[in-house]
Image 1 (tube, helix red, strand yellow):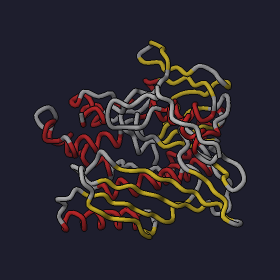
Image 2 (cartoon, rainbow, N blue to C red):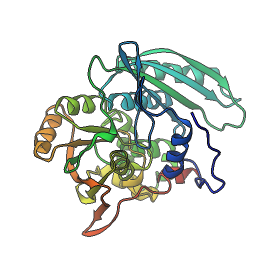
Image 3 (spheres, rainbow, N blue to C red):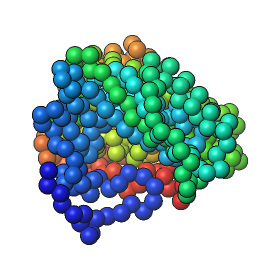
Image 4 (cartoon, rainbow, N blue to C red):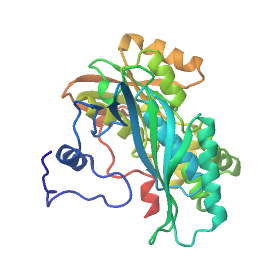
Length: 345
């Protein structure tokens, strides 16, 4: 495989968060294995997991770290990696965790992370099968880097690159569910004077209710005929929708007013000064489905207790990507940084 040196002009992010999409695409094209042969789904911007062939078996592999949170990082790590596997149409099966700890970490705190990992795995019927644990110089918080392995159980894989021209864009869950929990838990003391105590308490519980897992939503959407699935993470629903359009090579028109935002989310984001549509959003799932099947998809999700809304439509190959907010239409582009990441500056 050819290797190309990095461009001297490659952009750098201004702080914590995803590497810029344009440069990441260049790096993947230069250095990663492309799809083909035993690589059924290869790496690309907006693609959640790889699918590789082992003998007669297709294995789904996803990897994600948890870097913003310090509270309940085990549950975060298991859930976000399970999400990445589930949106490929697979069942999450085995989890590997690399735990990097500050040098002053206490044994009780480390055991709490392990217990959290194990509890989250049990709830998703996943086995914690290994990893690595060490104290690392230069850290001011623990970091968990997770890898989830999934089983397609004989099904064809889905991909965020599978949206088709004319498909409806459905969003489950709503905007900034993860950000709501994260900000309330990590920055709650600073917000206490600006938020009602009951609202802040409910926001802290967003990790569990409504929750940041999309495993069940992905299962229902797959059965109901989804063409493509993509879970929302850094950069929020704006980025998640853009990433599916980018992976699929399509245009997209989005109605911001149709995107569900819970009252607690609005309150927390307003107090923190962040845009809920651009804040880390695990718990939301982007679904592409034929326009004529959109209403049936929403009903199927609702019957499983999953809230969903029709938020846009995919356009032609190479088409424009636009978002309409309060009657004004502009380009749909990912934010330079996740809104929550800026709080860590």
